[in-house]
Structure formats: structure tokens, C-alpha cells
Image (cartoon, rainbow, N blue to C red; front, side, top):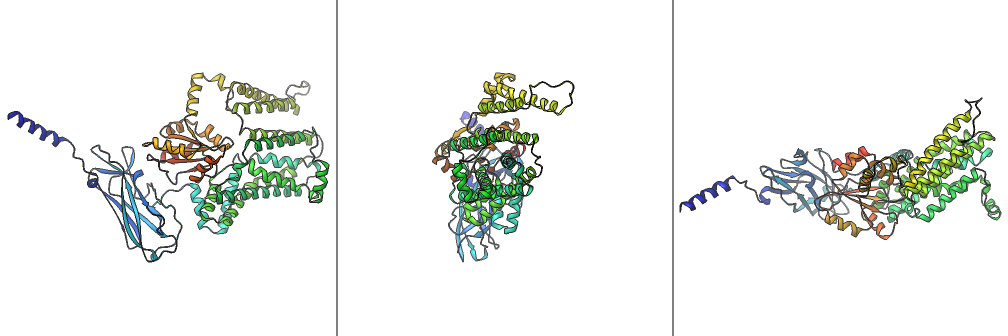
Amino acid sequence: MRHFSFLLLFSVILFGALPKFLMPDEAFKPSATVNDKQQVIATVNIAKDIYLYEEKLHVVDVNSDDGIIFKSVIMPKSTDHHDEKVFLDSPIIIVNLAKNGNVSGKVSFEVAIEYQGCSEQGLCYEPLKKVFTLEVDSDKLQSNAPITNKSETKSSQSTTIEPSSESDSIAQTLKEGSLLFIIISFLGFGFLLALTPCVFPMIPILSSVIVAQGKNITTRKAFMMSLVYVLAMSVAYTVAGVLAGMFGANLQVAFQTPWIIVTFSLIFVALSLSMFDYYELQMPQFIQSRLNKVGQKQGGYMGVALMGFFSALIVGPCVAAPLAGALIYIGQTGDALLGGIALFALSVGMGIPLIIVGVSAGKFMPKPGAWMDTIKAIFGVMLIGVAIWMISRILPENITLLLWSFLLIATAVNMGAFESLHLDCPRSPKAITKSIGLILFMYGASLFFGGISGAKDPLRPLSEFTIPQSILSAQRVKETSFQKITSIEELNVILKNSQGKKVMLDFYADWCVACKELEHNTFSDTSVKAKMSEFVLIQADVTANGESEKALSKKYGVFGPPAILFFDENGKLIKGRTIVGYQDPEPFLEHLNKL
């Protein structure tokens, strides 16, 4: 009996010392009502020593077909707690509503509150969800397009509406801005895009066309040819963009097939050889005579227009936030006219620097003579460079290094790098040319040895010889840490197996220049690598642009690479956090930290 009394006393002491955990319905008491302003007031009343995770708290529009949509969601300010963003007090969320369609009078609709939290005693509850049926007077609501149908707001500001990506913000500008504001904005966007590598290859193309005119060129003609080139380029971007927005099929992507890239690379090589006067590039006589009848006498503008049109589709298939925003707008509203105007303004903005360069090429053209041959040779080398740059999209990187080495070595030899220099004239211009030629030769030689050794980085062509193999092997392992997929089914399997960890999905293509810049500059950054190790890394390879790749891109509204999407620990897409286009390491790392 004494033993039983002792055990009873010990049990009372033991269980009295253990923490008492509340049941989920005691720890969390969600509620949702509609106030006089026809706003949804949602809250989760939390018990003492209970907190909620900010990233797990969502207010969701259950049925988007009831005519009531979320216009904006205002979240309370969160607190840093155990290195997490949490709510230590009961959060109050305000949802501003709008009506979509011809609804009127009292309308019933459903909202759900999704949440997850923990006890300070050490117990974490599973994700929970509660659905509420509410009623709103739709006659007091404004008609407006939603920012999102399913709000997933994560904000640290008390009056901040849910985050949206740059492309979504631009799409919203198209919906709400005036026509003049839209045109001016997209002109500015285009001018900024002109400073990216996507447009640089067009400079030697346009300049070489003007230089090829020789003594027949005037400043006025150079301006007209540049304008025709840019307008044709703008038409191509506009047509491709409208088709992509309306049908989800990117015309530019279709032009990135190997046979088209090889064909145009050979065309640029042929144009460059004519610059070196190996031959005079002419169409067959019977074609020339027919073209003369339909406008060849207009000064070759038809050829310039064709070059501008196809250059836009083949040379510069980059996707950036302004372009994606216009495509999203067209896809959502079907307004191809306004979307097309925005795209045309964007491409004209991209072409402004090209017009300036083209006019300069015509204005400062030297008089016929030796200088003319030198200028033509320079643009001939640049055209071969464009050809190598294009074909590098479908070639292994070390083979590309070999091609660049051949170009640089041949250029160095033609510059007289190995010709003797008269000692009685050491300060002649030829000495400077010879010095530049020797530097090009040495760099070309390093690219050659790097290429045959399997190097990939043109800035570190001798890495295979100078970096220990153990470090190179470790780098290669990190480079291949992305899981490659090409279909929705493959993605779903990985998302299902990645529960509990965030996922980063990178849309990539071999022909995408900005994608390779992301790999070499951003993904290789030490700090970025460390942060990316916290994610499951997936790479959707859309190089082939087959049916499965198209379906994958269309599902997530991706109009072309590069685009980076993020999924939460439950495999749900984190809306408003998509990155479109290239980003430097610093802003990319900041973006990852915000996730």
C-alpha cells in the first residue's frame, strides 16, 4: 500500500511538471466577418504562449466563380522570433473586395483561413484550415480586376498589399494607366533593355549593313536605313509578343532551332567575308532584275528591313520583366491592341541606341581609301563574332572557346602581330597595332589551350591547368546540383517528394544568353550558392520546345527563359515572387532572403 501511495505521489509530481499542451481548437480560434465597409475582417485568436508563422498565414478566396474577388489584402506587421517571422499576438487581416461580372445585391461567398503555429513549450501544430461562408452587398463594391484570386500575402508592413512580381506590376500598369503613360513607360523600358547583352549583337549587324554601302552612304541615308531596321525589328517583336500573349506560343522560341541558328550563323559569316573583299556578295542576276522592278531602286531598304525583322526573332530572344508584363496583360485580357502598342513602344525604345549608332556609322564614315578597308575589316570581324555568339547556343562551351580562339588568332595575324617592325620608327601607329595584335594572340592562344582541355569559362580559360582537380570536381558537382525536368509530371513528382523544403524552379534553354549569364555570374556566387543550398533546385530545360515543355511553360505563365519560380514547403507556388530575366548576385540573394 505504501508503494502504491509513493507511485501515486510520484505520478502527480511528474505530470504536474510536464507542460500542458492545448488542443488545436483551443490554441487557435479563427474567425471571419464582413464589416460595414464591405471588407472581410479575418483573424486567428491565439492562446497564451502560442504564435503563428507569417509565411503560413493565408486568406484564400475559395471560389473565384461567385463574382466576388480579392482586390487587396492588408497584413499586420510580424515579429522576429527564433529567426522566423511570426505573430505573437492575434493577427487581424483586412481584405478589400471587388465584384467581377454582373452580380448585384446580397452575394454569398466563401473564404478560407490557412494557418500554422507553435507553442512556446516546444510543440508545433500541423497546418490547419477553416472555411467561412460570408455575405456581402455587391452593390457597394467597385468593379475591378483582381490582383489575385487566391491571396498568399506575406508582408512585414502594416499597410502593404500582397507582393507582386515586377512583371505582374507592369501588367497592372497596362490595366490602369493611360495610353500616353503606357507608351512613355514602355519606351523607357525598351531603352533600358537596349543596354543589355540581348541587343548588343544587333549593333555590328546594322553597322556593317551601313558600312557596306561605302562611299554611297550619307547621313540621311544612314538614318533612314537605321530607322527601317528598327521599325522592322519592332514589328517582329510586336507580332511575336501578341501571338505569345494570345496563344501562349512564343514565336521567338520557334526560331531557336539548331538548323535556323546554323543557317543564320553561316549568313553572317558570308557577310563578313564580303567585308574582307573575298568576293562581292550579290544575288543571282535574274533575282536582282526582278527585285529592281519591285523596289530595289529604293536603296536596299527591303534587305535592311528583312535583316531587322529576323534579327529580332533570332538574335535577341531575351525575355525581361516589361516584355513578360505585356504578355501577361494580353493573355489575361485578350486586349491585343493595347498590348501590341506597348510592345511596339518597348521595341522602339530598344532601337533608339541602334539608330544613334547607325547614324554615327554613316556620319563618320572615312573617305574611300585604306581607312575604308580597315573599317570594313573591323565590322567583318564583328560579324564573325556575332556568328560565333549565335552558334554557341547549340555547341558545347569548350568548342565555343576554340572558335573564339581561331577568330582572335586570325585577327592578330592580320593586324601584323608577327611582322617585323622598323627600329628607326618605334613610335609609328604600326607599333600600337602590333602590340594589340600580340595581346589578342596571347588571349586567343589561352582560349585554344583552354578549349582543348575542356574549359568552359572564357574569363578563366586555363582553369583546368591552374586550379587543382579536387576543387574543379567540387565545382562541377555544384554546377550539376539542379535536377533537370522537361514536363509537368516530372515536376509534380519532385514537388511531392520535397515536402518540408522550399523549391526553386529555373526555366532554362541552351540558346538563352541570359540563362548562361545567370549560371556563370549569379548561381556561381559564393553567397548565392550557400543560400540556394536551402532549396530543392530544379531546372526546366525548354531548349527543345516540345509539347511537354510548352505545357510546362504555359501552366506557370512562362513566355520564355530565363524565369525563376519558387514553391513553399507544401509544394504551392509562391505568387508574386517570380523572377523574369537576368539578375545580378546581390539583388538575387536579397530576393532569396525575403523568401
